[in-house]
Image 1: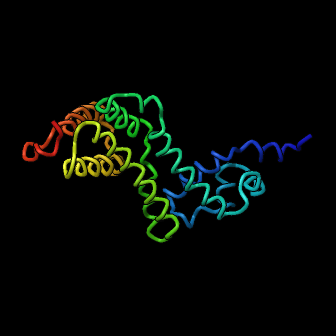
Image 2: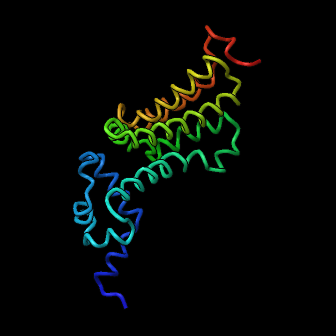
Image 3: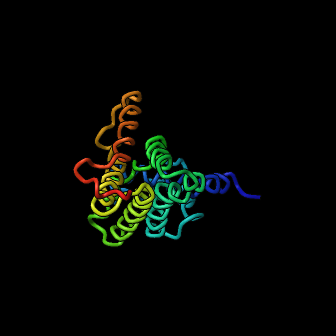
Length: 198
């Protein structure tokens, strides 16, 4: 039978370690993501860490994979969203990013990527996944050429940074602007009508 301490260590799930590590990354930077500090924040012993990770480097690798999965793949691999018509899929993506705060760790990840080439490689891969996903929607909506690329980049960038730049709590205003933004993304630029297939 396991001792109470062993049970306590086992009771902290891998995801709990990773979420706490992400929170620490945001508040104090990647250098602050240390085993002992995480254990203290989680109210467990340092030995509990080793139920899930080999060492700090293993934790950091899992942290990157967790971020890519839980804050990007969870959206682009969602079968219910994939089944929707392109215009409704676009709106659902906008809502999901905002409601679930899927971009809340992006700023910290980008800061980390500036000082670590391996992290930068993963961040760039995630950005490409997001761009490819957005581009596919706009292709289905009939956009081509520069109209397509402008919408792809604008949509991806805006929704990655909205929570950082516009962190107000006026939900009614946010919903109104979301509706207007959705309409804008669906409407061809008047000066570039040739950018949409007819």
